[in-house]
Length: 241
Image (tube, rainbow, N blue to C red):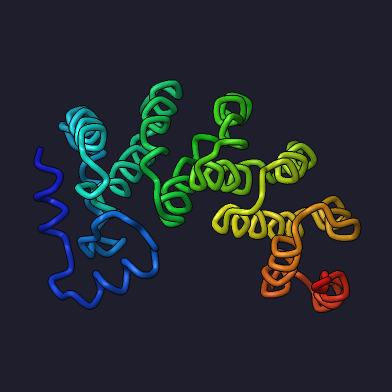
């Protein structure tokens, strides 16, 4: 299986989309310009095909041996999409092992957000998943910490975990842009789903002014929050000192 050949064959033939996508995803990797529907279709075909085991072996080898300048943005994305599509047919330990090798390759918010959201099986294994990825909370790498925050947002904003999730969010080191944006997004989602539980984190501020105000902004942009609550959120904005 020639992964790079398939990616290049699926790429948009013009330069315009490639350059646009490269700017949007803010990656340091080379971007071919493969649109997400084409990436998802390729991932689905690989995940359901007879060579899926060879795919994981090859992509692991490619990403391990390649210098950063040689890695393709879409190569990392495809690996995550295939793993997510195949995950329900694999032992959890194997899924987590593949993710452990892939997460250090994330260098874009899109890698994190798109790939993490695909693992619906994590809802059936919340305790094991949280325990496994807890070390990412204090990881020095920006995208690794964002991965932890997005995991919390996607799979741990339920009634059982909301209080512990909010506690974890307050403990994530702040100051890196893509981490702070993820924290704001997660807090806004918590306000949507658990208003009474999440609101105290804004009434007695525990996040940086950037995270605090960005969370309010994102929550006020949501159609799932009432106008009255949006007005109250607006009154909680932190002003520059």
